[in-house]
Length: 150
Image (tube, rainbow, N blue to C red; front, side):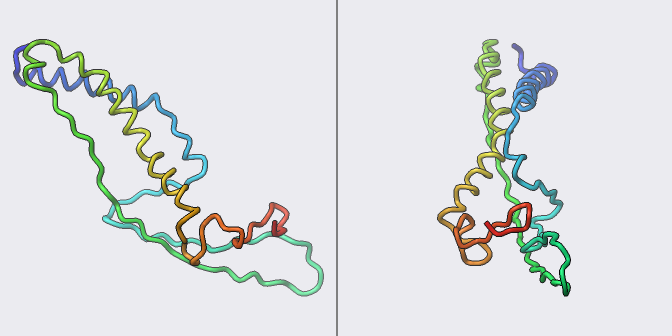
């Protein structure tokens, strides 16, 4: 292939299609248990309630449930995976060899957030969280849908 602007544009379009098709074919499952938040800054601070409430039968005096307010900060990071197609491969018309790689990059790109989430999830056993305890800790109270501590 003659290396010129139009041919490079066409090559890019083909590689981009392979990337996008592979990206769209991945269905990561981490969205089932994480809250996805948007960011427009270098870091974001998010507030959250440290506990939630449950209804109970009203017998006697009201029971006021004190809410705990916490926050966390997420600093944005930039990730990349840059590849280059050798000039000789383009000149020798063997650039198609790289199309599966572009698809793999699309799959990897779609799975990258899941890899980050699962690394954080597994860190819930050995690392402490906001209250100084492990995230997955028998001392953390867990409440059933009925409002009972389990």
